[in-house]
Every structure is written in C-alpha cells, then in structure tokens.
Image (cartoon, rainbow, N blue to C red; front, side, top):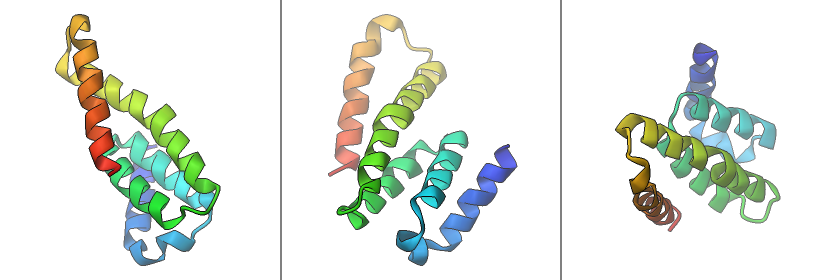
Length: 106
C-alpha cells in the first residue's frame, strides 16, 4: 500500500551513497514505490542519475524502458487529469512533456 511505498522510498534515500551497488530488483522496488506515490520528478531525476552510474549494465535499458513505457504515460495521464485539458490541446501538452523530459535527460 501507500505506507509500504513510502517506507521503501525512505529506506532508499537514507542509503543514498550505497544506491549504485544494490541489486536491480531493489532499484525496481524503489522506482515502483515512487511511481505509486506519483513522485514523477524523482523518478526522472534519480533514474537519470542511476542510468549514468550504471551505463555499462543491462539494467540501464530496463530503467529507460520503465521511464519511457510506464512512467511517461502515467505522468501524462496525471497532467491531463489534473489540468482537465481539452483533448484538442493534447498535441501541445505532449510536445511540452517531451521537451521537459529531454531537458531532464541532458
């Protein structure tokens, strides 16, 4: 539930200096917990940092796929629901979202 997700986030953030050496499964739990809590900004910031740190490992592509295929659609749905956007403006929002994510990944 939400409390378990927050406990995972808290535990991972306490271990900030050791995060790079943890197994991929632990990282997945952390990113799933942040997704459950709608911490989209943290997912992209921490995901980008981790991807740079593990750039020679397969987990980097798993992380990228998670960010692109899971987090981005949920973030867009969150924005659409929050802003109650007119469907005719979706293209504009998608371009803005893509531009924002590009800047995060720079």
